[in-house]
Length: 316
Image 1 (cartoon, rainbow, N blue to C red):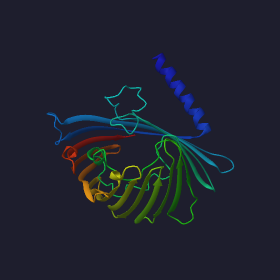
Image 2 (cartoon, rainbow, N blue to C red):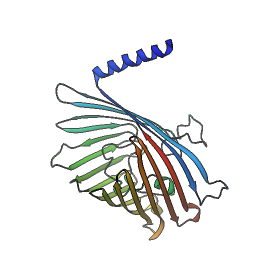
Image 3 (cartoon, helix red, strand yellow):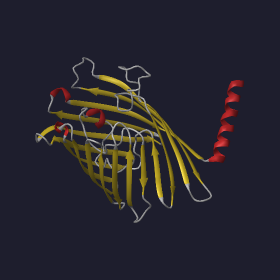
Image 4 (cartoon, one colour):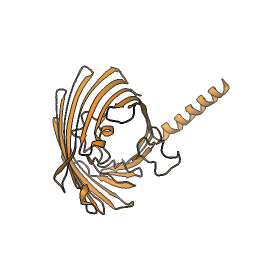
């Protein structure tokens, strides 16, 4: 009991100090997942997985009107079993790896500056995935060669979002220095019922361009997008990805469908196409049940997938 009381007292004291310095918001979530891939060669193609995260955000406004924020996300998706726990290469790009997010911002009349050492590119984030309506299982269903959405920097980035010039218009820039120099810019216009975005990114060798359109009307959401990816060092990696998605929400029940294809621009051959249907239901506040079925038809038969995924998602 003494240990519990001491811990409680310390927590209250810490909360009081933090509250005087900044506004603090804490949120989190946990997903329990069953996944089955009928195309796997193993006898047992089913497996249990989990994803968890805790997000802590600090925000403070100075007397001069400047606002600073610090956002720290603790993520756990299960360590990659093929690598040791302290393997630096086992980062967020690895299958099943654990990783954290960390970014900060400084905003005022001049706009917003973003400092992102985790490579999440918060300045341009949110401008893509217009067609990602049934996305819970698609990422795990697509092959490792999939190129879609925003490229993003692999290391620390400095981002800048211009102050609002026209209601709904967002213009952002991003720059990073890592193994390869990264630069990108994005323009998005959101009119409520529809939104459109364009993002252009480049490194020393790669150019990536994204364009997407979304429409939202009375529970119905539609989206279409196209991504072109070019690698100056490897022409076989020049790809064009096109995707379309639709979802409809009514009384806590959401039905979603998504299709897409990826072509090799060098050979004019289709590398793969995918389709996915998803059903999600808000059981209660903070509790969502999700079922999705994904199918990937790839040029290489070993990359074909038929994935059934069932999730219980808890939000706090």
